[in-house]
Length: 383
View 1: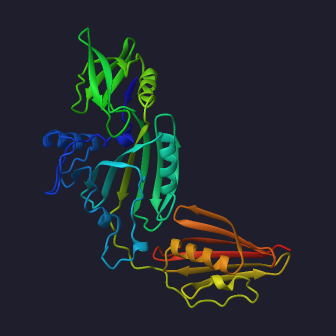
View 2: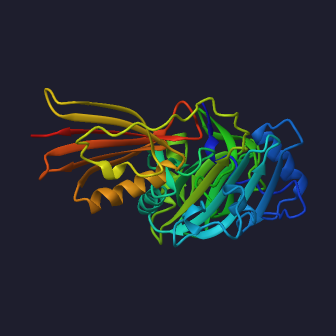
View 3: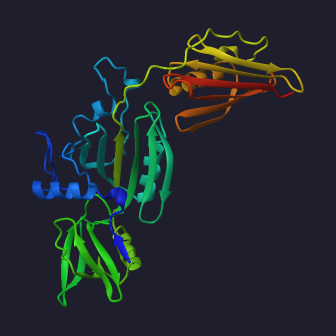
């Protein structure tokens, strides 16, 4: 059985050199040619139009522009997409991958003091606040991974992973090499597992089959112990790596990966915005039909229960409409009973017990024209 000590989604964490433009920097001291070769091998790019820029203890200087195409000094702060990071994190470095098709990938690594489970809770909460929205996640004793997307741009998505780090700056790994036990001292890096290599599980233990970095491992090494804990199979290896986080001040590695798709030229909308329809008489939430919304479709009835449904479209973002609706409902004395985000849309449920109505507003992209967003409001009497 073969294994990778670094999961596929973390395969770039330990890249240690740059190839590309003039502003590149070397990360962790590896020679450029070796790092460039490894980069192309890991990513299997196959074209020289892609570039990798590596920054030691720094963010890509173009990060704000990458996340906000067309950003200027006059852009309001509330319209600027920025990445919220753990307040106690120590920035280790970042990678900027610029692909030939215009897609940008940004990897940012932090060392954060604290238990990985606590750090993961903080990070997940940050990525579920405007302008970000969590779309999924997975967690086990070795890794917490959360996927997210921007609520302001359909071209930005990513994931963040949290892993426990050794509690000490260095740790020992013992291997058997040519019948002799050799002890290696490894430094705490950006993620656990720290061992950037491939291995296979044999009857007599774990054998190193490929070394991907400049650590002192050699092909053919057999694992004997990690941090003083014996290792003879994959399960014991993971237990030993996890044990490195115990017995001292806990630390966690936090890795963000952002993918920013290249801006595409939209075709001319095939949808022609018609003249707005009038609201039905007695519609109980007229204040939600603001001047920037065009009323497309209306239905209502009185039996067996009074109900209304209207569909409106707007050029404003779903986030802006949802935020305004929350304020308008509260100001009008309605109670917000549910507020759920899904994809790029938001569903708000509300009621007014005194007036005897309950309703739902669904705010999402308008399927007939991607340049517009749709608002569907349903309200019915409750007594």
